[in-house]
Figure (cartoon, helix red, strand yellow):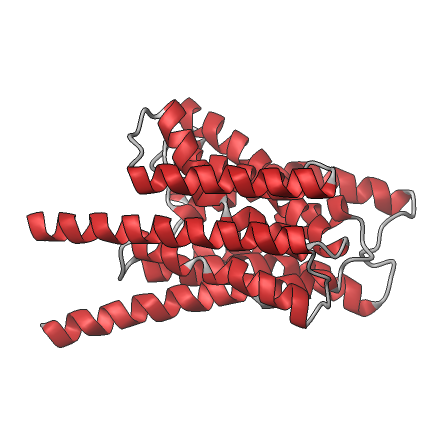
Length: 302
């Protein structure tokens, strides 16, 4: 029995790590190859091909009954329409960050997401904030202020990516929808915009798809696979481990974003950014410690 549990736990950790590492390492390198393509066009293709691929997968491994039931619920339609806008904006922010050689901003955005989630939970769900999490949030705000003060600009990509991802997570928790089915509906909504948009830019000759080199066209098609692959492994991992641990392992993604930006994409690291990163890393350590401590207490009670 113990061996079986350990086996399941190991599978969960491995699957979640595969997803997080894929999000963190290949994804920025992949989208860097599309930096010459308009960000909006990339987002539209990402939504379109994600829908096509996910639609095929769900037909093969399950059925579309849950997807169809979404159209019968006004609440689900309302929330998933908003989350579709949020995830498209988040994708756009990340793709734009890669194209502008600002992967570090994307990294920081995903690092601060849990702290933003704490604030959202406090203000909208009336959730209590522990002392350590309050310190984490305070450190995050201080880190953002340092960036603003030293760079003389609002770190909009950091705020955009972190905020959209946090609100996305908050809203998805409000509805009982399978992650894959929810993404299918979200990508379906994006597809409703992407098809006429792609037709328009094709007729006007502004498209890169089928109007550039083969590599660009292939990479635009593969945006769907790049989106679905890590999500598949992350959801698979969640079957064997707790959500809290999965959230901790997710930090591998922005960690690899940071490493990739410096050692592969050769982005410069400013002192102000480095100081902000260090402060945020301290905040994350406090957040993880507080999360693990609560999990241990709950386990002992049970």
